[in-house]
Image (cartoon, rainbow, N blue to C red; front, side, top):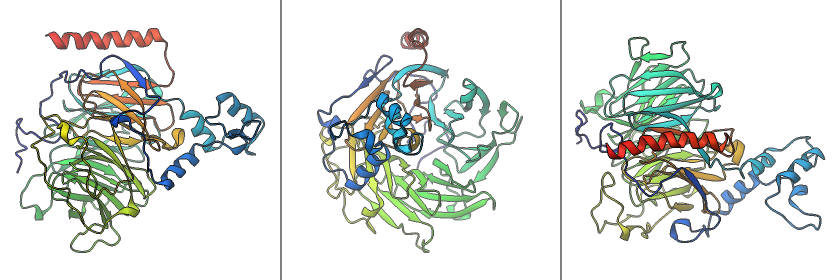
Length: 493
């Protein structure tokens, strides 16, 4: 059992306290690399990607057939922006405007790789950074007891500066309610706090300027064991929260009843990540240090709390899960240094195959991944596809599908221990871009739901944005000089 009461707690979120440090030299300089080809293991194109997900993804970003073919009837992709605009003017689609597939085909070619432009610098590690569903707000959580909510539409002005209450170790996760009125934040404690972010107060000092209500996820059955919460998410209707804990359990909290409505002893190790599968809220995905992804159907849970199914494929613990939102596909980031794409139709009713015993000793919190393990595969891998190239060490690195509106979810992107952000093509598996700026692990990053903009945050305290095109090179150079000057003094003081 972990001791989570003191500063020596070596949790899954990282092993050092709230001081800035430079850990990586693999991604230096403020630039982005475009990968035009896939060579070597880390950039190997996928050979056997499931035809259905490949076809769905292509359909979401393939323009009208009249635009796809040239004057000789030959298929020509990608279609140039000039031809796309001309097709819109001539009303090729019959709608008088771009279809969603036309829009995705055009916008998905412009990756947010220019920059970065500095949003904020903080004296402690950034653990969480996410856009709201409409892209108007941006939430960043730091180890130094601070959560900042920026108004994106008002030039990234700080709309809310939250000083957290009863924080243990760090902010492990935050979630913004669908109506954007409330924010919940979690730490290594069974208490999740909820804050009214729609109020007029800019400074939210816990229980001084505003009340930070505590939602107790523990129960009388816990035997007094004080677990921590690694992951917390709002349901789509905003009525419930789902949480994954260091007590190997999943909890669902009913906000209207103000109590835990469901508690499942879900895994054999820490539950690092949970989320609702789709808008219905019936299905829950979970990922754990036991290396399994599990699917829970709340409509048919029996007293034994058995999952609807299990998905095997990772060789090490799972750090994050992101749903595609269709109740069928999701991705997971793993400590085996891979992202895996899953199809619910491939689930097993239980664990049918063991990954086998390790032939090496390894702890991701302070050791590099063993070279001999990089080519290993699970004997019963049920995943649809595997993506390699990034690094998952020291902290629970997150991965996501790119936005449906602007890209048709044709990309996967992730933070990395080596201080970069990686972007993969979902269908081919190719590493299409690498964003280089930070000096320490990038735990979280977020792609704007509608604009070609991506924001990354790091343990170096920097929050920066990347765009497809933006401010002048002079402005970008000015920001970079300020950032690098700060890093220079940190290195030598």
